[in-house]
Picture: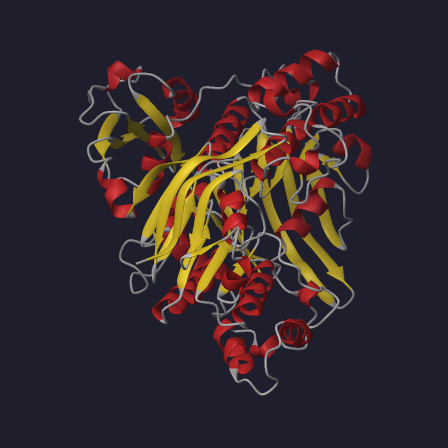
Amino acid sequence: MSAVVIQNLTKTFDKGKRIALNNLCADFPKGKISGIVGPDGAGKTTLLRILAGLMQIDSGQCLVWDFDTEKEPEKIQESLGYLPQKFGLYEDLTVSQNLSLYKDLQEINENDPVFAKLMEFSGLASFTERLAGNLSGGMKQKLGLISILLRKPALLLLDEPTTGVDPKSQNDLWEMIAELNNQGMTIIASTSYLEEAEKCHYTFLLNEGQVLYRGTPSSLKETMKGKTFYFEGVGDVKRTVLDSLIGKNGIVDTIIEGSKIRVTFNAANPDQNPERYGLNEKAKLLPRDPYYEDAFISILGGIPKRPALKLTKSPQAEMETDLMIQAVDLSRSFGDFKAVNCISFSVKKGEIFGLLGPNGAGKSTTFKMLCGILPATDGEALVGGKSLRQTPDEARGLIGYMAQKFSLYNNMTVAQNLRFFSGIYPVKNRKKTREEMIAVFNLEEYLDVLTVDLPLGYKQRLAFSCALMHKPQILFLDEPTSGVDPLTRREFWHQINLLADAGVSILVSTHLMDEAEFCDRIGLIYKGSLRIVDTPEGLKKRVPKEISEKPGLIDAFLYFCSEREER
């Protein structure tokens, strides 16, 4: 039996100019976890809002439990729970007060044991008196989820429930989702993280408002057999090689993974002679098991070849120091709370250095100190050899910064934001620079759209382009791809790799373990302290064998960022 049946569903915006869902047909099975994946703007959120009865359709039919969402929405609401991307928690109320409010709104009996059960189920029982505004991202999502669960819905709709939360919180949330499903709940969840899609019984891949694939994750991966490989033995020129491979000889996707280059072909059993791909005889093409991500990118036509930013040699490129970013015993306190405790590390010219850690570990605070936005309580922050304490203006002129919460102007269009940011930086040819950013980040279609109305992935593109407007030699990226689809994420990382290859030093924070693989070195932060710095391969080798025989970065993350003995 199907929980949801959709027939020839069409939904448009802007008086029919923009098609969100295009004659879409799908059915979501009862008692299963179904995942909705697809690029930004594919129609995922629109579909969930229609299922929740929050949006009218242009044509077609949508049935939930055999009730029409247009004609009988009140019958659907009784058995449905919907967690949007931005759930309305009251940040000045405690956890307990938020739940009490939602309990009253839903007319749930005061003595119903569901309250205590959900607190225990979510792991929030110890935080009932904490203000919601002081919770970590993962805790806020858990609180939002159990607020929805108060009414005990038969169908649960989740719109990207783990965006912006750390790997441990992601695991916790998906354990909750699996347990709810084991209890008989039907769950439909959209996600931009393809490792989460693999936890679903069925996945629906949307693009341009249509279903490109419907089936099990394993069936989709099967289509990639014989098409997925590693290039090994490439050496120090891996970033240059990466760019040269895109779109050539049947290659639809490439990405750096540690010392190797991961490649995906559009056909099985490709020519394995490295010289065919412009590599020397030391390089080897070795088969690997396919990921769901390989199939996702392949079915969408592969990574588009976009122009690279043209970086001219700047005065800072000639600086004597090779250490472009230095944190020396860096600390920051907020009252009695020590957010960052005596952190030291450095980033070399042309290096990509990743900062990983749970929500609230101190990553963003460290970023702000190194950018000169937040003064350090103790220690020293230097960029390009310039002290942010002694010569802050000189130091800041070397920096490009993309913040977690964008510094974009929501009431301005994309074109207006580009014009504004090109005006505040010392950019020589502003018009030409803006045109270059539009081409590199594929912004042409959205130039006249207000920033507030942009899909998240395009907000990220715009924020990235504004941070690069003055062609900085030092770049700070605070979770630059959080919540964006894998295709956009891959485009971002190709640009990041090209920037590093041109000598730009990059400090990036991320919650995504596959992205951490793209970094030259990684620093793991936990409770304000830097636990360890190593290469991705080095971190994996440090995980004890009793934890995992073949550890991944997620194992290293959970091992070093845990309540074990302090290192």
